[in-house]
Image 1 (spheres, rainbow, N blue to C red):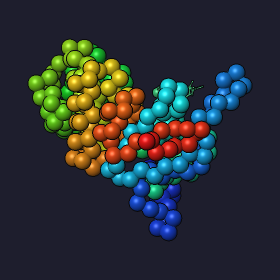
Image 2 (image 1 turned 90 degrees about the vertical axis):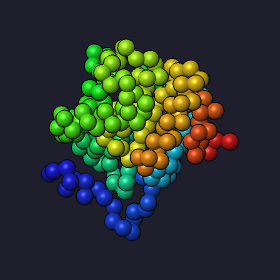
Image 3 (image 1 turned 45 degrees about the vertical axis):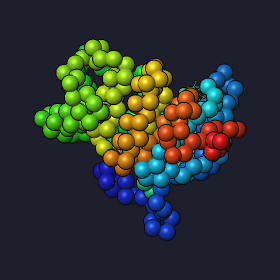
Image 4 (image 1 turned 30 degrees about the vertical axis):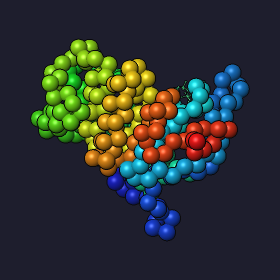
Length: 243
Ligand SMILES: Nc1ncnc2c1ncn2[C@@H]1O[C@H](COP(=O)(O)OP(=O)(O)OP(=O)(O)O)[C@@H](O)[C@H]1O
Ligand SMILES: [Mg+2]
């Protein structure tokens, strides 16, 4: 079964479908450690619109990264209904899910996870090459996006020759090269000073509009969370609007 036919099989018909980019309910996720079960998400639900910006806040260990990993399809929930663009993506096998993820979702983490021995351009090209784009086209695209995030003069710098703020901009450019429907960031400014943090959050907000993608950010910084149009937290395994 090829990718497209598999996807079609899991697209809901028009009576069941709606306009959210992500919609889940009754979502549960728990971990077992030494046979002790810890419930992280318990019948959680949320609807995220296409192009929306959302911050997830809350104390350490409450489940923010767990939630982000599920939103990014890096981890599967134990149960619950989960739709991404009206597709029941967790019904995909692991290989199909990885293919879907590589084409639809961009990730930015606290530690940039860039390849140090490669240049900015080479790092940003990688997802495009994986998605099947030719080398020259991938390079051109990478250069355009790096210029957009303010790194036009750092194209050929190796990652370890860049500042922390610049490294995060490369990570953002790398996430954007596939033009994702959803950009997920887990404490993207956790290692940056105040000025750089503000610039990165401002940039993410601008890119959200330019690329018409939803942006979901986990952050401990309320000042920065408020750049997003909605702020939620996790309480008793459920998602709540944060006040
Ligand atoms: N693979 C795992 N196995 C067992 N327990 C886990 C696993 N991953 C996470 N946990 C536990 O689940 C809880 C939620 O973890 P998570 O990483 O989602 O927290 P968080 O809100 O992102 O915290 P922080 O702000 O410190 O990053 C924690 O108590 C953690 O110890
Ligand atoms: Mg975390």
